[in-house]
Length: 309
Image (spheres, rainbow, N blue to C red):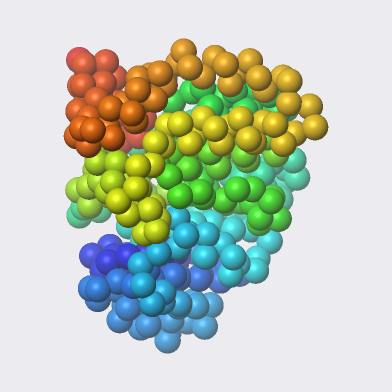
């Protein structure tokens, strides 16, 4: 559980982990130098249950280095990142682990979502999933991961730790979760359970809502990048190529990489990266136009039908 200034929702997330029907787990918390009551909440829960291990960074490293620290300290056969503002249904871990135990070719398992608001009230139930990601074909899975719009919340599923440790984990740029999904797609099938066992909280402080300017996003992902131009769409596309070229037979992956330019507004994203170096508000403006006029982003907005009418 990576966390920074999460006192408002942290207790509920921790309580949902403690309530899991599967009892064989260890919770590793990395506090990214919080300045609110996060430390006190974490220390209290750690004192109540020896399965909870609490660590605190001396300074804020940025979100993705903190996420990766959580993984580096993991010891179990399976691994899951638990955002401090989400909640797990009682059967979440047991259901995902059972599914992975039954399918040794799968690399991760995720469930449907129940989107909730700041007070924990249900906004919608989403069965949205990444089509084709369960294919036996590596190139088909890769194409699905890089060409289709999706929430990227598969990265908050339950992984086989030995598979995840061979991946790029979470690089420090906006869209890195998409890169990790693509890396995992090259390594095996994804499982999806048709039951909303994960409660995903939507609120104004969420990264995607609170950080819209490139400099803000770069610093949020990694504090070392504060003030730098990040060009995230270009970095994402370059990472896709790097992942493909590492394979012994990369040629079946080339066509999806070339097609990438023509789908999902990617050419506009690349152009916006460049424009944003002079006009930082261009990213938020382009996203707003796209979502209001053409289609909402995958996730809670699409689930609620926001965007084009």
